[in-house]
Length: 331
Length: 204
Image (cartoon, rainbow over all chains, first blue to last red; front, side, top):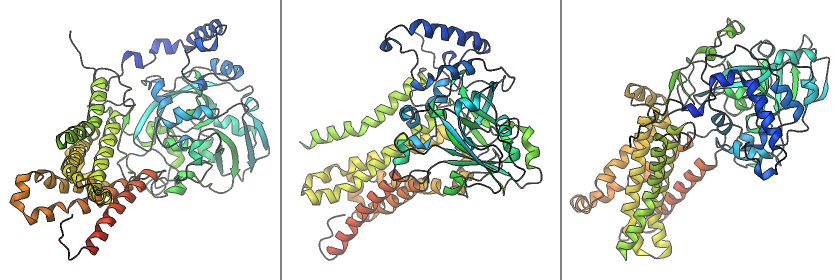
């Protein structure tokens, strides 16, 4: 028998959704849905095809995600396998280990879900997820995600531009920043019960208004053609692909338009390590490691799949937002 | 009896190595998920944790022997210490191989820039002579110098504790627990040393 060692940085064929199949994903999803319907008559124990309850979701949301429009974003990228995207997460509300979110996030109840909007805008109030998504054409965008810890993934998100959402609330000209807040609920989020955490809950993030309105900034409700799993920030999360991952706040419950720069969680904990802007920048090191390169996941043991990090994570179209700014100072 | 205890201890000590070894073999044979999507990092953390565990166990032998009045515990200190060295060496090698990919130019630059790397490497360099001189022959040859040399374990334990503390991000539980254990074990020595300053000086 010939044992051929697998080059660990090459993804196995089975790891990645075949591109052809993924391009035909509506058909694929349709078939899957038909299959799901067919097996729904079987006893629950018999259906083990979905390994994670978070992948189910409400029918209306599944339907809306299923009819997402294809786009050209990231067409040429090799996708990170679904299992890595959903089992290797930072979501400290569920624990500090990378697999804690996958293990504990099923406790989070995302239905019903509502988002409170207030601050410097005309339209305020509390809106259900269904309201926020009503009439919204979803689209799929394949984005690179660069974590501040120097690893990266490529994820096919399903969502819509944040700008579309913002316009509905009619922000005033006094709104210079937008603040986002994650759910705080110790019952559902075991990490928030930890006495050893340095985080002052709830998790907060923010963007400057022009960053928030940039066409690349996405509000995601799904990934890989499915409802967003809880560990990935269900039911509604931000995706800002040119910034380090921690800016892309998960499980949003409040949006506030502000005149002043909001406090942000990681900037509060260690301002010398995590700036408000957090733009991906190979020139600006984290105090404990270089940001010049990154490990594209899945990474191998002997060939760690290291690639050079690009300014703004390669999304050069955002450069004009920062013209005239010293990105070493405003990191 | 002592041989049985040594065998059992050896088997226990080698278990983490067997665990990580089989995981690496399975990984190389294509079970790519066995150590998560960042296996290099996983191996470095695993070996580092076990090096620290054995370091703590080594430091605990003398106080435990006194507390439990079990003089035979001392017979096993060397093996515990050698396991600490073994896992520390694997930790360092896996860092070089899997995270740095043997880019030693980068190692130099990184070590100067990142204090936690400098502390970790210094600790390993201090551990090296202790491992080398752990045999009875060296013990005889160095006489009183051997005891003095092996007191290096105290400062190097502090370095290791700080090496870990410097990596705190959002949860300080484990680094602080390990540092507290080191501190406790060192304080027990210090108390003992001041109490028996003019006694036989037999314990170390």
